[in-house]
Image (tube, rainbow, N blue to C red):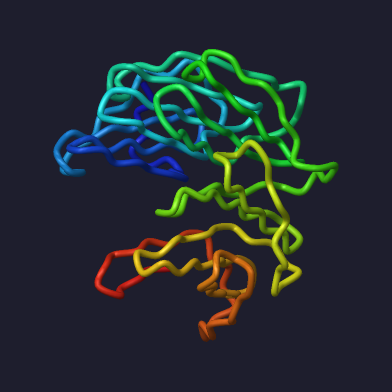
Length: 230
């Protein structure tokens, strides 16, 4: 355990029921079972920076990070097992998403796109086209479609659970760091220099939303009732 883990850089979090899991630098994983009132550091078999975490329920979850590191927990984040590590590839993984307890996707730098059908025990690479753009975030919309935010103005959509992907017409040539499907059926895309766009037709067309900032936009949350945080 690291004495200063509570002060480490944390890059992603996931909540299921009463459990909250946060991941970050030096392989740090912190968990809370009281809504963030108190935290404990998990036992983790890596010191690679962790960039994304997905919890299927209050027991089963996965985390990804640098060196193509993928971890799995079966006990609510208390302990983790290393299921993939490829430091020689020199590609950080940046996000992870699971459809159910068996089928999942992990995405990252230089076009890294990995799939699993056995709960994360093994992973197979399945590149999207011939590009090596950084794939920054994967999200699922309420209608079941998946979306990918990528660098250099690239956006992708899948209508079959990630089996195949199509490139969407992008309104911006800079990098996107995230997407947010909204409860009213809309979709937000955001990224460099305060760029924020909304689509009401599944990414077929976009309108720009003026943000009044040139700060990079990294994450967003739909609070319901028309309230959104970016």
